[in-house]
Each structure stands twice: as structure tokens, then as C-alpha cells.
Length: 387
Image (cartoon, rainbow, N blue to C red; front, side):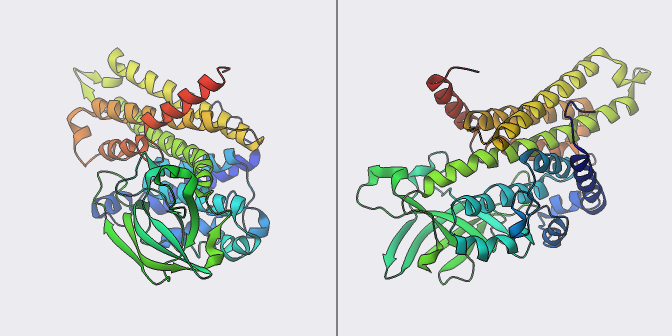
């Protein structure tokens, strides 16, 4: 049950996503989590459904769907496997959208259709070991060498960087004044075949374990001149604009995780008996479930209002951050309380709520921490207090 009014097309895509997740992800997700295993065949299966080109025009083999429709599908995937939802979110929201919006005609023609078909998986490389929330302090350097660029540095926290065929990487191209910060950063299209490219440390994570997160090292990596995206020095601006879209995807992922935990807790409350009756008959449990359902509904409503504004062409920085902040903190609150409903059983791997809890935590951190979202929202409301 939902307050969303879905079109027949959206309901069909929702059904397709749900059936795919239940058939092809659900039987394996617990084992993939235990083994920290990334299943590469999932990329091809998502592509067959059109789920890797949902927001791309048909001219680039995409489905040309609205943002809200994409988020409906993403939530269904996240309910079953948050790790696969990461892949789908990053690919659709960041590299493909950056290339579509800022890439040259030649770059779009070369990369977007193969990305939509799943032949090239996209990744996003902004953060570094010493540049997380303060991403403008990144140290990766790009120097001109004839028509080419030479990139040197290390990128951190790159989702599915082990399997990516196209990576949108930010590097500093203006070295005249270190205080220039974001103004001296450019975006480059990096592919694994470039000399000097290597995959470094794979992180051993608490959650989203089936989504590999790695460091990438650029050791005097030679990048052809035609791989510069847009204008030199505008790369950080492009990245921030793309993160507005990415944060909507993370919000949908968080809502999916929260929904999975809530539904598991509600089922368990009807099955588990204590003191001679189902624990769902106790007001304490009913109140928890009522608050879970309310917060999930509120988060989804905020998310889709922001998505509708984006599809109307409006500036959504404030609302994307609000959606991301509220949905991810909802996911953490709901999964924490779901574990509590399960009691001791919520703390063991026999039941999935401990995985939901682990998966939820990082949604409050990546693509901008909750603290960063509050800064973004705070600055925006001071500039324009209207709700």
C-alpha cells in the first residue's frame, strides 16, 4: 500500500523489478553478503531489463523514463538486495548523467549506448583518502602533455571499481594557487586499459558487502585529450550537480532497506509468541510498527516530490538533500527498531534484519554524510527561507 499514484507503466516496471529481485537476487543475497561476493552476471541481467539506461534517451539505447519511475524500480531492488541497488544507483545517477549532460557528442556516442546495454559499467571517482566530505581538497593531479593529460593520484571509496569500464574521475588541473580549491578541478573519462591505471585496496566493509568498494591508483596515467569532460576547471561543479541526482537514488535505496526491515518485523510480530500471545498484540510492538510505517511513507513522499520537481526542470539541491537526509536516517531508525522487535534473534544471521541494519548505516555516510546534507539545506534555506 502506498500514497503514490503510479501510472500503468510504472506499475509494470515496479512488478518487473520486484519479480527480478525475488527470482534472481533473493536466493543468493545472504551468501553473497557472507562471502563479500560481487556477481558480475547481474550486470547483464539488469541491462536486459533496461535498468542500466533508465534515464538515458532512446537514441543512446535508454528507456527515457522519468526520475520517479526509476526510483520506483530502484526501491524494489533495494528491498531484496541493497548491494545490487548500489550498482544500479551509481551507474544511472552519476557517470551516465554526467556524460549525458556535460559530455561531448563524440563522448556520448562512444560511451552511453554501451553503458545502457551493460557492456560498460559506470563508476564515479571523486573522494580520496584525505578528501571525503571536503572533496574540493582532492590531490589527484592532471598535467598536460601535448594533446594528452597525465593523471597521478589515488581515489578512494569507488563503488564496483573492480568491474567498471567507464570511470568519471576528478583531478586538479589548475596548480597555480592551492586555495583555488574546486575552481581548479576537472573531470576525465578513465578506462581500465589506460597505462598507469590499477585497482588498489578492496575495503572489508560492515555492510553492502556484495558491492565491492576499492581504491584506484593513477600512476602517471596517460589520458587522451578527448577524455576531458566539458570545460577545464568545471569538473567539481559537474560532480556536485550530478550528486543532486545521486542523492535521490540513495534515498530510494534507503527506503527499500527500511521497507525490508519493517516488513520482516511485521511478519515476525504475528509469528513470535510470548506470554501466551503474539508479540504484535502488545502495544509496545504496535507503536514501533506504526512509527516505522509512518516514517517510511513520509520519506517516500518527500523523495517523489523532489523527483517530480527535478523532472519539471526545477533546481532540487535543497530537496535532494532533504530526501537523502530523511530517508537514510529513517532507514537507520527502522532497522534498529526491527532488530529490537526480533530481540535476540535480530542479532544473529539466521534472520535478515541484522544485514538490513548493517546495510542501512552507510546510507547516512556516502554521497554526502547527514552532517553535509544539513549544511547544504541550512545554507539554502538561509538564502531562500521559503518552504
